[in-house]
Length: 214
Image 1 (cartoon, rainbow, N blue to C red):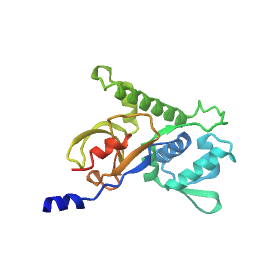
Image 2 (cartoon, helix red, strand yellow; image 1 turned 60 degrees about the vertical axis):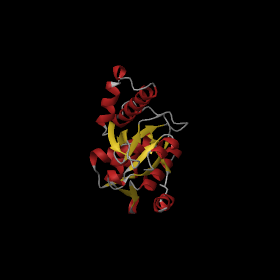
Image 3 (cartoon, one colour; image 1 turned 135 degrees about the vertical axis):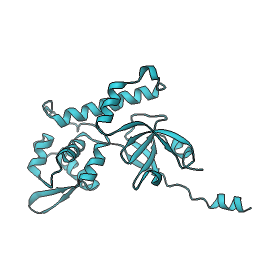
Image 4 (cartoon, one colour; image 1 turned 120 degrees about the vertical axis):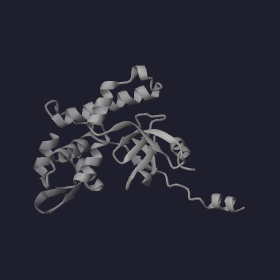
């Protein structure tokens, strides 16, 4: 009877959706802050970093997202202070997308090229995972690119269920390697066993749920 009561009172883990992929321009700005650790940035410098003319929808979206995440905080006289920790976290996400109507040549931008490399590496890794993770066909170059940005495939963790599960670690986000896809969002639950702010996530909610209940 006591065991049954304890089972009924066990809290249901809170599962929420987490944006796993971010705008390529937001990623570029985060990467610049991660590499250079500026104290403050002006609007003109931000536009130069992103290779934008300014005044368009892309600038508005990037600045809105940067402030919503807390990576930038607007100060007086058009300057923005930068939060390094937030920027570092966002670099551990996958960059996607180019806003329709933007036809700017970014081929000379190091940040743009890095973002494209990371995006392609993740796509190749997902393709390999979806075909069964055959050790004979491991995408060595793609994994090397992921690791160069601090993303760690094959991290073994003990889930709240007690099961050992293999994940890909994106700093604070531990993504279960089962049923990976190129989804923009993933399902997550707090994972304090791996530190403050850590999350255990999966592309499919049913996969995550399996590892949350002891």
